[in-house]
Image 1 (spheres, helix red, strand yellow):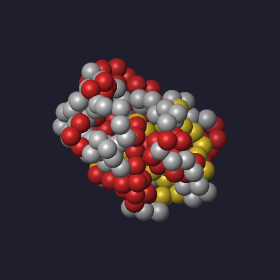
Image 2: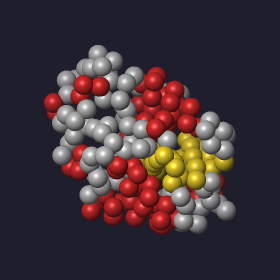
Image 3: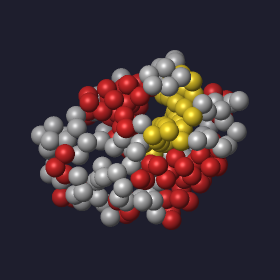
Length: 191
């Protein structure tokens, strides 16, 4: 099982710019600004030890992971368990077009389903990893380590190209949605 994990959200994509929610695999690439965001975050990861980079199979996360991999010298593996949340009939809708109801009532993937697959992904690897995923799956996993449910975790903000650090082995969250890694995090992932 993974012992130490940094969860990175993809950089700005055309879905973000257009306020669209999407789980489409090959749409909505990163914007130029998104690439710049990722390069900034990737600089934070230089010199840290990872056993690998794993990404969601969506285009925006694959582009993010490949860019980071080029900067820190690691290959990327895809894993559908860390993909975007299932959006049901609202895939491709603008955020303001989605009714203000809970996910289950909208026919979207449930919180518990996302948590199960994210936790399952932790068991797929051994060591220290960087996962490149999406805001909600990152929030779901982070909230579980904090002992929070969906409603209790609404205030967790997973910014574009941000990093959330979890010491899985000791069940501690060390950072949430940060663009700058602390010395404590850097020490945890030192070579």
